[in-house]
Amino acid sequence: MEGIIQSFYIDWQLMTAQLINFTIVILVLWKFAYKPILSILRQRSEKIEKSLKQAEEIEESLKNAQEEKKKIIKEASVKGQSLVEEASQNAEKAKKQKLEETRAESEKIINDAKEQIRGERERMLADLRRELGELVLLASDKITRGKIDERLNDQLVNEVLEDLEKQEEFKLS
Image (tube, rainbow, N blue to C red; front, side, top):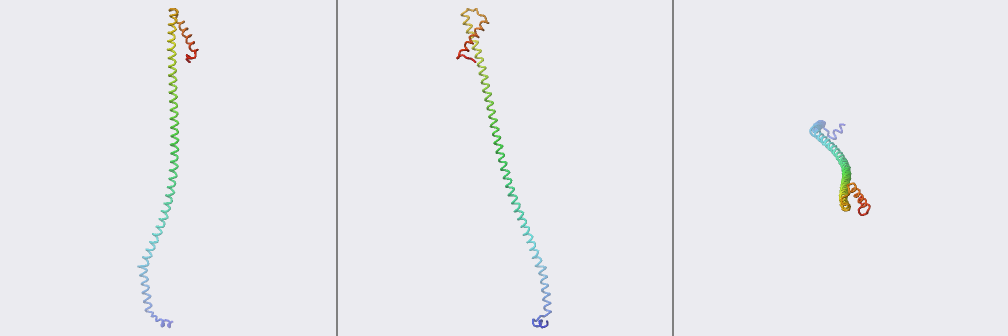
């Protein structure tokens, strides 16, 4: 081995000093360069992992928000459709109710008119009977010259009315 040492000119003192210097440089680099660089790289790696997790969470949140948006739109559509149907039904009910009210009102008007016509007819018949009674009384008075009593007068009026009702043009019922 000595031959090798002499052929390469290795000086143990110099080699030991260089080894100590190399060790000191390694320790100084370890302490002041490698550890801070590793710390910075570890922090950077953690930030990247944290950012990736946040990006995944944001992506998941965005996906959930889009699904929620679709769900809300679907619910709103269903609600809107039900509101339209309800409004249509309410409009139909209101239309039917208004139609019923109009029918009832028109029936009332017709019934009132019929009652009014009946009342008018009865008054006309009463007036006609009274006038006929007076005419019959006048005629019979002129014929008999005042010898008819009230009972006979009523009988004559009824006979005249019956004769008039039998004729087509004076039918009163």
